[in-house]
Length: 259
Image (cartoon, rainbow, N blue to C red; front, top):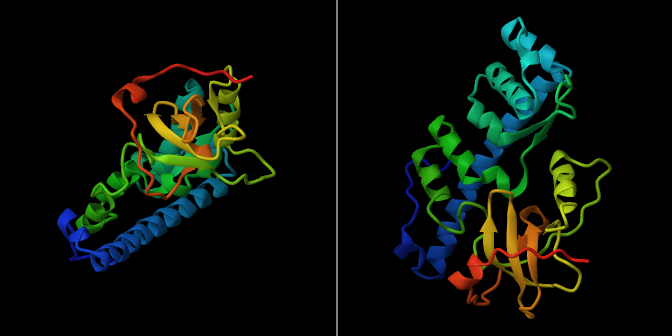
């Protein structure tokens, strides 16, 4: 397995010049590729299980337990969790792994049909997923160490002081579960916007709220402009621009409802 027998460089080694940084980057890329490739394989297996059950909770439970009696007692989030538990049972993996790799959505509380949406992008290599895979023996200690050694990692992909800009708009025919949730939240007095407003080319992150995956931002060039934006709507900008975010800036929780 890639990365076996190799320990990630410590901070001193990473700062040993260009050669050290590039060598570290090669190891990090190899570890990321290994973890993401394995995650995508498992996602495909889970999607196959769901397809064989015709995306029916009733059928899924029959395949997993033989008798689906009791499933009608669950509603809402717990019903979606029941789907994930059944998938985990049929796949032979733990609930934590399934819950970290796919999003289960039922349109109605008592709906039998479910959709399964694979986690993608930066979230595919979240610290939570990496930890679950490591505890399950899917990642070696060395690969786990290099993926969690603190380089550009945090409780989310963003930290106060980061600079962000809007992600490119991708047009899809059907809204995903994440997009539907974002659309609902955007209607709540438009407190949390799906994207930075027009005219804001570069924004500075001054607070990260992981409870609803949002960011408090201020315009990098006009500090009178500020607001909240969905984490999924923006991307970090690779820049050496210095941030002067202070505790006072991060502590501000005011909401801005744009007209």
